[in-house]
Image (tube, rainbow, N blue to C red; front, side, top):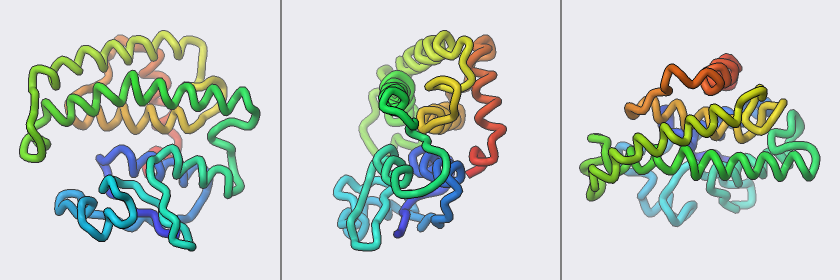
Length: 203
C-alpha cells in the first residue's frame, strides 16, 4: 500500500497519521508537495479525481480517499484498538460524532481558511466578510462541544475514537490559522490536554 499525504499543518493527512499511530500500523507517508500544487497534477488526479490528499492506494491499485474512509478500511483490516467502536451502538455513536465534528467545527474552520486567511488569497476568490463571520460560528461550535464534553473523557464517551482524532486535527489546525481555543471552555481545554498528551498526537 502507498499512503499519499502532506506534513503539518495539513489537518486531513494528520488524521490518518494519528490513526496509524494509535493502531500501531507502520505505513510510511509518501509526501505530496501542496505548495507546488502536486495534489492537482494529472498524476495524482489519476488516483483521486478531486485532487485531494490523503489518498491510500492498495496493492491491487484500488484507491481510497477521504480520511474517515481510509481509517475505517485500516481499522477493519488490522489488529489493535477498534477506533470506530466495537458494538453496533458504539459504531453508530462514533459515526454520529464524526459527522457533528465535521459539520459544526470543521465547516466554519474551512470557510475561515478559504475566505479570510492571507495564505489562500492567491488560490481563490475570497469573500472576506463571510470568512470572518465563521469566527463566531466556530466559537459557537466550541461552546456546544464544551457542554457535550461535561462528564466525558472523550468526544464519543469513555474511549478514544476516530471522533477525537477528527476533533483534535480540527482544533489544532484552527489554532494555526488564527482561531485559538477560548480560555473559558474548561471541558474542551481538559479534553484537548488529554488527547494531546497521547503519543499519537505528535504524528
